Image (cartoon, rainbow, N blue to C red; front, side, top):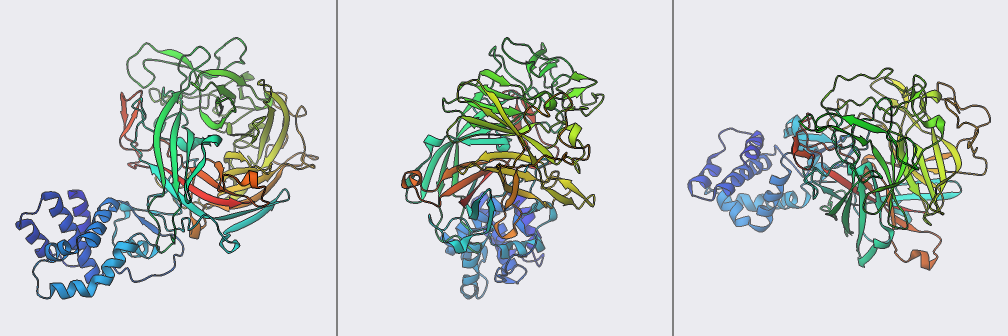
Length: 637
């Protein structure tokens, strides 16, 4: 609390205005209350003198700021103002002449403070007196190669009622003959950055991919819903190098309570509650742990009935400490789907492969994509992503980029299965190196693969190409490709695809994001099926600059939900779709509404981190604590 008080002292218009607060100390109130009282006093003085004026109720424009460092303190201040006004008057303001009159004079302003402390108007005022290190821009949250996150104060409308009118449509698009409408932000919640799972490891990166168990989703009250979501972290904290982190799937309970009469001027508190339930560790076919360590440059793990699997040979404990060393299957998990039998489908970047795991987390199947997609260096299969381990950061790979196949850290980023559970789709994050990668300005054509999984044995059926959107990189003054990070098959048969810029946001050198979209992709009759024609080693569907070859028609790509819209700003990394009306399929209504859940990927960024079953402690060098945050949107079609 003392650190909070020291920061709030910055509010003082006059350094001699401590008398009343000091008087509270002399009267012997408890220490914690003394500190709170002192801080509240400075806040009150800022209001009284006009240094902080919340009456300037202007509409938000451009980039606004969220109150960050003093958030918890302000919550306590509001509680005192609302529920202990006498304490505020007698303790904070002391026995000054006219104290009661002053309180009455400022009562409306104090009520406004209590009700509207997190409005855009407040952000505008706070910009003047919060030190630069204590606020962040709403339009530019953290995430290198990931989508951003939110704080617990949102200046957006969050769900007024179960039903909405067309007048609330924020954005609309038509793709593949279906009209889609985004009607607003419905909710938000978070898991703290330093939360740990049952194994003692940090719960981080859970926005890599998510899947809500369909039969768990239900309405429990007129405006309350609950369900179970499975969240997939990627390869663990790797700011300083990859670690021997065992990939896993977290099980989390969701409770969404829609908020009545919420608005940008009167936002609701977090209305999505997330409760950690369990963690499933992922193992190989032999039951041994998998690892997030970068795969070896050459060589692979061999198991009967499996293709060559990416594997990492490590020394010590794989975290830089003492140990016997070993070799494990390497996984950089990025896509997640739940099979009808309760097993899990996981796509990864190292292979890039698609794996099936039992409900207990044991690998039971692996899909190797066409040869054209597999990474090769010097004519040999090479699964390394040039991501050295934390214990050998100077390790170099030659050449660093594969000469063909998937680029480093640009593998099978997205995975989804059809609502009937019979078809699996997976997509590359961007172009293969022989057809546009690795340069960001050229890697536009991303391959989309379709597998029939109805029989239990996957059968490769179709292959398409998605031309990813481009945006202007203001740091380089050039047009570059927005790589995709997630896809989700819609009941209409189309797909939501999450495309975004990279390297921008909270904790990065540049903060302003310019492209973060949930867009719609539709496969049509005219879309070219590439299967078999361009699947051989080094086969290319485009030039080295990413220009498609003649005769190839990509899928239809339609821009839809802009995460950077200031009036409805929201950000996430993964998708899950559930119905607003849990009986709408039975009703057979033409227009259906859905909640779209989007989780952020915080890359395990915390100052209180734990890996290796709690034994390895770390603090991210960024200095930030980035919560795992979740947004809920409403869409209809």
